[in-house]
Length: 358
Image (cartoon, rainbow, N blue to C red; front, side, top):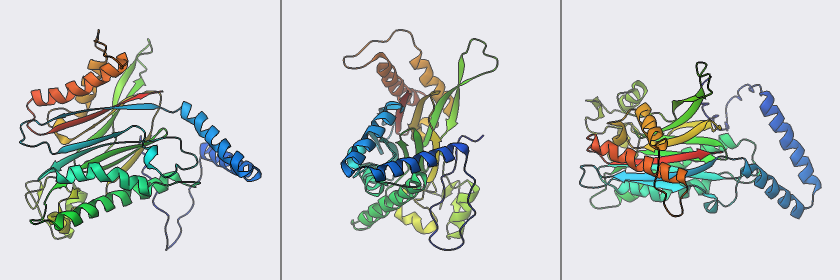
């Protein structure tokens, strides 16, 4: 079975209605519980209703995965650091209200700028605020569908806002940026990606040959890259009147989707992210988000194995206020970014490492 489910398409406002998909037993059970809770709520006074919902959220929150983010950035041989990143383990404070069935929302993102640092910094400053404004709230029927629409609208607005600001400058800004964002809603991970930065998950899986119960690490890709050499991307660019030369849009731009890059938007470069989702399990160890600088000298599997090697090292020097596990993850993140530069990566390198604990 595929790790990913593509998110449901947004509700159609016109045209024929597609046939209903048959619900799984788990979905049927969830729907029954939701209807039962709705009936019980209707019979309760308003103050008791709010208290009951908060109690349910509190109980649910106790069984959720705990995510902690660590970040490392290296300039490499570049004159300027054009990457940006955001760590928001709990962004509830930015939301007007959480959906009724949601207990916690986390957000982590890496932005890899090109042509300057203004697009990446703008996205790092504004994208999560736009997301918070558009995030679903209250009683919702289909959170997946609403989150997909929210992410698509958020990326579109962030791109439009930056292009508006860029075009008002004299001379106009020509900066662009990739974006890889991980949104964790309770135990569900949503990944929105533009460009060639990546996200991946380390999942420990049991093997039939391991009689001692040991698990082996499996690297699961959480994002899809966008560059002009991919057939679908190249066709879109050519249909828009652009060309692909030497693997680049107009022979210059290495990515086919981005925030900014106003001069290439007429050539088929778009800001619609690829969206994926994945439910976290107790077998999941960590998530890596990184710009393409890391992957110029590391494969995805090598990066995961490198992190595991640091996590499994013998003695560690404890630091005030940090647990042993936190010290190990911090060291793994810093060493991974440092090793990329040591291996000869001249590009900016930014890494976010998310530990997952149940």
